[in-house]
Length: 309
Ligand SMILES: [Zn+2]
Image (cartoon, rainbow, N blue to C red; front, top):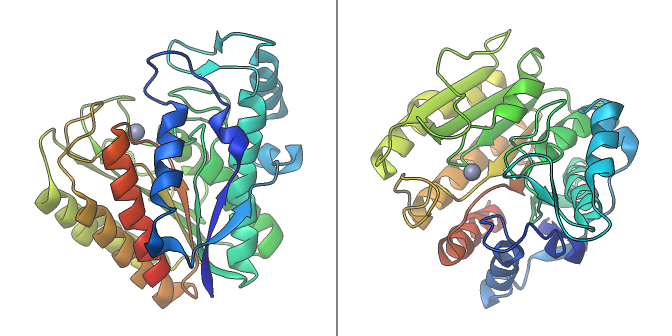
């Protein structure tokens, strides 16, 4: 069984404006890195549009309508100072969420062993009823609820190693005992959530904040002693990864010091748990990462491990 890459060219057309860190070149850098010889066995698939039904498992219809209504006919429009839309942003957001649903379908049916969704806009800051932090729809949450509704994969664990806390995913998961949200993130940092005391209604949110300047030892310690045991104990039917690469040492938006090998290590450990609990099923979704070279090399290290899982 293969690792499948889900993406769509329209994700490059989500234009956030000059100088915005969440730019098309990010996805170009990732896709270029995945053209290397190492990835010739990576299966490539076109992301479909998510349906309203798929997105509405997570977001109220009013939120979906609000996002789509905010898409400008030309130029740019912002739902907040950071979260900017251009004419094709709505289509890109639907492909991003659709990629994750298709990845879940592929992994659940056994067509792929695991999958990586190279998409933008990212998703983990999008709360149930609020777009924010470059995110419109919560792609990973849409995939998680799709896995349950369509494939009966009841228990879904998300590990989010983006340097920012995934306040949106936590907001969506926190009152559902069959959804586990785990995060390592820099604190204090945007969006300000992710205190270890935020445990969710059923102890199903696990937050492991790291101080600025923390690096590989602190990250691996938090993974080994907090995150991985929580996922092991949860016994998921599917593991999903909110794969942001902005905890990389070279990232300009934050101050953690992870290296490519740390992302590879975390991917390997999550793959081991997936093999133990859920037939190796892993769906990984691109979130942040703002130094283009670091993003490309760390993401390549991540996908290389998925292919080796
Ligand atoms: Zn981030």
